[in-house]
Amino acid sequence: MRRLGLTGGIGSGKSTVAELLRIHGAAVIDADAISRNVTAPGGSAIQPIADAFGAAFITADGALDRDQMRQASYADVHARKRLESIMHPLIGSALERDEAVAIESGSRCIVFDIPLLVESTRWRQKVDQVLVVDCLKEVQIARVVARSALARDMVEKIIASQASRTQRLRAADLIIFNAGDSKALLAREVQQIARLLGL
Image (cartoon, rainbow, N blue to C red; front, side, top):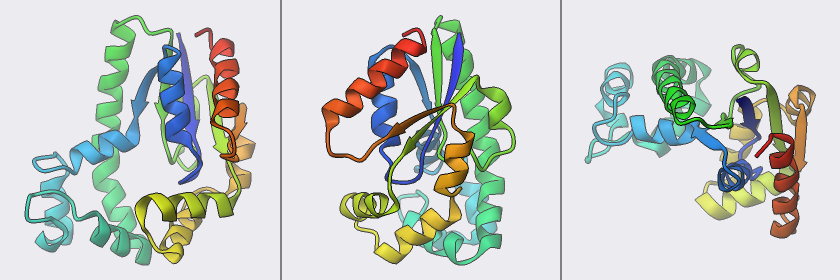
């Protein structure tokens, strides 16, 4: 069984690549999906976040107010670190649980979809290879603004808080450059990597 770390900057197309790998038979464990789950109404992160930041960061239906938290965490590095100290252990536990399920089911390849894989000190040791989905910064910005209606300056702050493009590429064993001009080309590139992974 192989463990692949999948990463890329916001708007790179990483989620699309993850879904294509899933279609080829990989077990995909998505850290973003776990993050959304633990910050949904009744999620395990809600009370610790309310305790640390105040009830104003929780919506009326009991979920994390993502817009307000995004503003706070990208304006103040200490707030971001406090949020990470709550979220990372919860996400880590869920990732380990999902990995155990994938192993039990006999998966030949587990893909860990981790946005901040390069920034983390522990992930390089947990995976056999790192696949980076790469694209130009202007493409990232355009995609994120179009899909999420975030202002350009907020998208730039998010990009600035992540590993640089150079850092990600240096950490990569495999690279997909996703200019976004051909879904068929992207699918072919993923198919080639799936074959390398034994899928």
